[in-house]
Image (cartoon, rainbow, N blue to C red; front, side):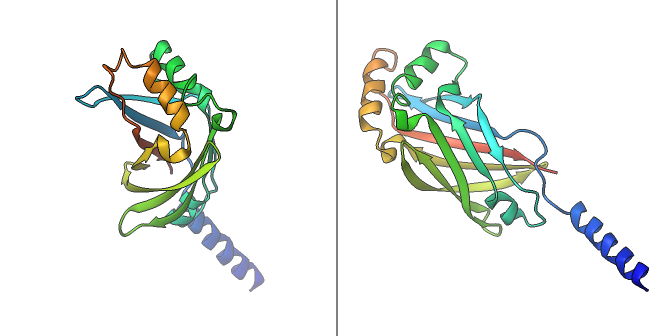
Length: 182
């Protein structure tokens, strides 16, 4: 009898683990900033992204277990000059060397989540829409760098890029993450 109970429990645990959400690859982060009067988008990522996330049977709990840390100096836009212009101005403050993020809430029915983002010592809750695409959670939202007490750094960026941007830069940035799971 004990063997049957133990076997049943082991089978139940195995079946439960088959339905668990688990990281299956690397977290991908994309940002898009804007320049020029026509609001042309410029996109990039970061090369140094650390993610801790726990396997879980529930999607919301899986996502809420995620903790990400990004080294802002690892910004990558596929243009060395642009990388330098952004990192030497926007991320020049000691308190802006990392970006951290956690997910505080998930609404699976509405396919929304709230990303708590910390940059320059300022935390903001960012509403995001998400969808499940072929084993990836893809979430999109927007931030304004001025919300993170970066006015002086942003102004330095605007001045540094004035000629390149024809004197038009925008402080809003679209953000996206893709989290592969199995």
